[in-house]
Amino acid sequence: MPHFKNYPKILYRFGNELDPVVTQNLATYVDIIDQVKDDITIYADYTVLDGDRPDILSYRMYGDIRYYWLFFYINDNLKEEGWPLTSQEVFDQMKKYYPHQYIRTYGNWFKSDFKIGNRATGKKSGAFGDIVQTYPDTGQIVVNTIDGKEFQKSEVVEAGFGFFNPDTIEIQRTGPQYDAIHHYEDATGKYVDIDPLNEPSGVTPVTFSERFVEENEKRKRIKIIKPDVIGQIYSEFNKALR
Image (cartoon, rainbow, N blue to C red):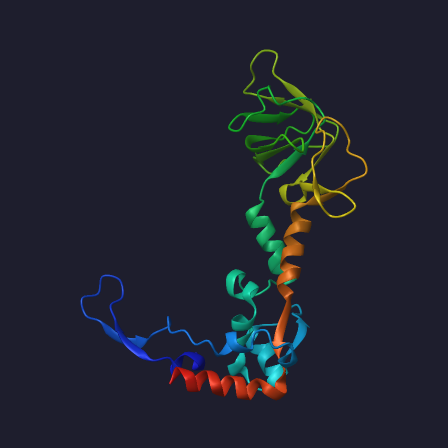
């Protein structure tokens, strides 16, 4: 990457190599960007579009791809969390992080056999799988279903492995794990607790998928250096490196 060629060189030994090699010292710190971080006159607000890559955005804003790294220097959220995902990447990541199925019930299962590691079996759908997570505060159970079958709303689910008189619950809602409720909010957006045995009212449910999307949307709102000063900032930074 052209940006790193200006970093001073040091001898560095990689891994188990016996001999050090000459490489750029990426730990070098220059505070030029910090000096102008609070100067709002050199910045503009920007919302990253679907498909925007750092190099593409740099070319579109400045006519040159070499300024791409400055987006990360002036936006702490990008530096810490990475570049925003596209809509498709968001969906793919949600399926990766939340691959199972959830069950929502108003039944009191908290002292039953609906525990992590036990089997859950739908009496109507024939869906079954191991319980991998439970959320007592929101009345939800996450099941790693097997053979592609899915639980159905209003069906009865048994816990255990065919023992006599197994514990049962009735499903009120079910679906992909990423559509389970992450938390509830009041009118001011504050987290609120609910009674998991009853349908909550006066509060807004926020699903795992909605929260995932919202966090990605926050990362899209960034600052960029205005085109008329980008050359000067870039030049001063590299001068300080040298």
